[in-house]
Amino acid sequence: MNARKKLIIPFLLPSMALVAVFFILPALQTIVLSLQDWDGTFRTTGFKGLENYFRLFQDQLFLDAVGHTFAYFVIITLLLFPIGLFLAVALQRIKRYKMFIQFCIFMPVTLSVVVAAVLWKWYIYDPNMGIINTFLRAIGLDSLAHPWLGDSKTALVAVIVMSTWHGIATWVIMIISGLDRIPSELIEAARLDGAGELTVFFKVTLPLLWEVLSSLLILSFINAMQQFPVIFAMTQGGPYGSTEVMGTYLYKIAFEGKMFSYGSAMAIVMAVIVLVVSSTGNKFIKTETIQY
Image 1 (cartoon, rainbow, N blue to C red):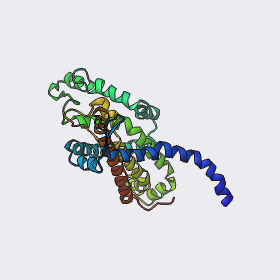
Image 2 (cartoon, one colour; image 1 turned 60 degrees about the vertical axis):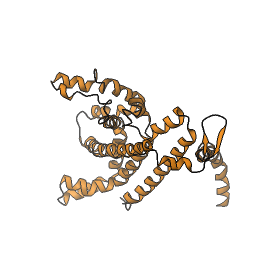
Image 3 (cartoon, rainbow, N blue to C red; image 1 turned 90 degrees about the horizontal axis):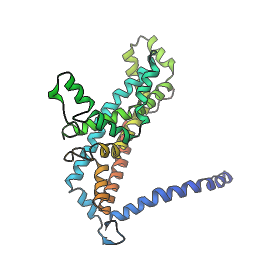
Image 4 (tube, rainbow, N blue to C red; image 1 turned 135 degrees about the vertical axis):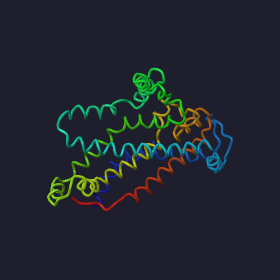
C-alpha cells in the first residue's frame, strides 16, 4: 500500500500545482485585496480591514443585486424544472418526429450564450422589429406591444425566458440520463399492481429521479450566482438597475469603477453565499440513496 501511495504522489503533483497556482493562490490574493484599498494601480492606500465588507451591507445597489440574483434563480428554476421534466419524459415516449423535436430542444445550447442573447435582444425583443411585437401588431393586439427589455417590470423576466430557452437542453439531457437508469421492471411491476400512469410517475419515477433533480437545483443556483454574459449582453443591468445581478454589479464596481478592493470583498461574499446555500440546500434536499 505504501508503495502504491508513493507511486500516486508523482502523478498528483502536477495537477495539485496547477490547482494551487490557478485557484488557491488567486483566492488568497482576493482575500488579501479585499482587506485593502486598491484602485488598480501599483500603489495602495493601505489596510482597511473589514471596512469593505461592512460597506457592502450598507450598499443598497448591492442588496438589490442580491435580490435580483435570487429572483433569477427562483424564476428560472420554476420554469426549467417542469419544462425539462416534461420534455425528457415525452422524448422517451414519442415515436414520430422524435429527431426533429430533439433538434429543436438541443439546438439552442450549441450557440454561444452571448450570441443567443444578442439574437433575442434584436430579433425577438426589439420594440420595433422584434418578432413578438410584430406578431402582436399583425393580429391586432397593438396595445400589448411592449419594450420588453426597456421596461423595469418586464426586463428581468424577459432575460430569464431567454436563459430558459438556451439552458433547457442541459436539464433534458440530465433528466433523460436519470430516466434511462431506472429499471423498466420497476415501472412494469407498479403497472401490474394496478397503478395508473400518474401514480407510477409520482410514486416510482420521480423519487428515483430526485438525485438528478437535486443536482440540477444546486447547479441552477450556482449558475444564477455566476450569471453575467446574458444580462450584460441584453440589458447591462438596466433599465434603472432592474436586471442588475451580483455578477454585473461586481464587474461595474471593479472594472468600470476601478474599486478593485471593494469588488474583491463582493467576490468573497458571493463565494461564501454559494458555499453556504449549496451545502445547506444539499443537506435539505438530500434523501437516502435508493439502490436499484
